[in-house]
Amino acid sequence: MQVALVGLEVEGRAALAYWQRLGAAVTVCDQDADKQVPAGTDRQLGEGYLKDLGRFDVIWRTAGINPDSILQANPGVQDKITTTINEFLSQSPTKHIIGITGTKGKGTTSTLIAKMLEAAGEQVYLGGNIGVSPLDFLPNLTENSWVVLELSSFQLADLKYSPNIAICLMVVPEHLNWHNDMDDYILAKAQLFEHQTSSDLAIYYANNDDARTIAGYSPGLKIPYFAEPGAHIADGAVVIAGREIVRTDELKLLGEHNWQNVCAAVTAVWQVTQNVEAMHSVLTAFSGLEHRLEPVREVGGVQYYNDSFAATPDAALAALAAIPQPKVIILGGFDRNLPIGHLARGLADHQRDVRKAILIGASASRLAAELDKAGFSNYTQEPAKDMAAILAHARQAAQPGDAVLLSPGFPSFGLFRDFVDRGEQFKQHVRQL
Image (tube, rainbow, N blue to C red; front, top):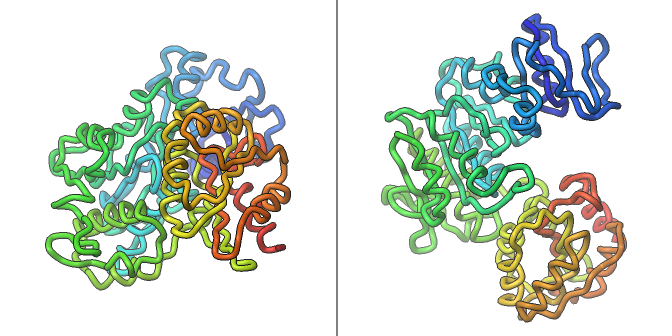
């Protein structure tokens, strides 16, 4: 078997190990001419990395590679292209698989589902976009195992199979530099549902038209959440089928946007087990994933929060609403030219409790123009290109009782390597204050 492995990051390395275990001859194809490839592995690197892929039996696309780029360079090879998720779904011995997509909240919702199923006594594996390739745990699965997969639009674009339980969280514009347009983005996410059967379940956020449209591709039973019959909020509690699961003031997750994630997770787990005690124990203990509204420390009466994962305007707005005290917010980064008027209007709506907005990165000038248009003037553009200077500016603007919030609303590229690098630098400098 001759396999072209297109892209060699975390997912690609797991795929390489998978194919080598099967005895295939693998050629790593990567745009980076200096990519470090394991010794003894054939390679096709640099500008011509997509050349003549039709000579291979299998073209394995890692998530960051758009399938259109492969097809443009190699017309007619569509049937040869596959992915980690396609291979996993076709080879998994268990059909107890829950797939989660959406623009934001996937990691939190996936983790909650996995933890609640574990607390109920199930054997559970969590993987996908969350950083663990499901190929790594494929050999450990039995027909009774449960698998929870966090799935991005990149992973779903050419999906050929669907899990038995599929979930779509809130969907807003994102990755439009990778997808042709918003319709293409929605269609990619819809693949999670399109290959379901009439006996499968499609769970979706009730208050989002795009999520409803995406779930509508499924021939299975549709179950909304944040509304009945799914989990919803009633009298200050998360409720499903008339049963109170947890009170919202018991949750350690910050922000009403996380109530949506909790309701999505409870709705999914309820289809498997009605173990309220297991759900409650997880929901009252789980405080969130790293770089998602993560409390760092309090210094001089000011609380610092790392929300570096917030790479869209809507995520920054959710963080603004989640932190009740007056705040200094650090906004900006690489500009993908997504609509930001609603972010500017949201800041204007929060004028009373936004002490200062510090604008950074390539997006700063466009965001400043939108803020002016919205009537929000309490901002400064920070020309500094390192986190120490950005944080010093934020600290100077904050007063005791305030919060300093890194919730950029834009990707990190330009100033930082990725959202992890951005968040780690923020935490490092906060700890040094």
